[in-house]
Length: 354
Image (cartoon, rainbow, N blue to C red; front, side, top):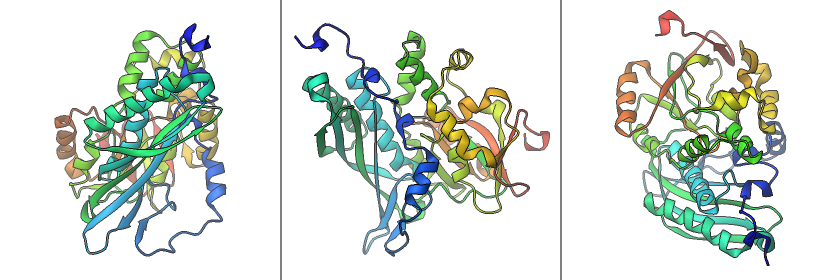
């Protein structure tokens, strides 16, 4: 009899890390890419040079751009169907983060068939297909291998008008920084792996992980939105640093950063994914003013995290209205400026900025 018949299937126990917490550490990724050429193909508008959410190529004879991304990871939840939905939502969100709309998806599956069986793999695919169908995106094929650890994700293509393309660069001094989801998914996923995540917190985590950032396609229509990216494995500090142009810094109002309900309980128990420490080592020299254990959630690797959006302050009300109409919870968490380099963390918002 298969062991799966006698004990519950816990996907998170079959891997060394969860979700985007299994990403290659940012320092290693940077080192790996340093020797590769970029900018050698004029039709490619966005490549890997700025760690953006998708590659972008101009379609001949059209003002449409093709967006292409791939994203896969190890299970962050135990249920195979839910894992498929989360992985699909995470991959589709890359296209929305650049202002596009996804139009085609292909699955990428690595599965320990002898240990976990084909039925669980089929459930992963079913979850992904259901999520893609809800978004109007065909899951039209893919590739699978037998492996020692389970991984799943999607390669996704999307389209965006050239005038509406948003990248993770371009934040201007004076812009406000908005975040559209609370932080803490990496820490809670670590608690789940240890069997310590309480049931209400599990359902709160699962709900957030399954929400696609489709509001990005609407925000991209606004010229006052100067830069946009989604928050994933390098944490808030890592992805916020990617948004900084030369001569522009960020004042981060840490008291305004939303956190998942119940997160403090797990931080107090010192339940942290290893990627928290690796992320902090990568950004430490560029961050000032961080207090105490704030690094835990500031560097927490997010899976399908919220959008980070740089907005002209004169359009703040408009952007907030767009997000509210889309049912998106949002918080203004900082301001870009010319007075500093890197990120300066403040507990209170200066009166001149409120």
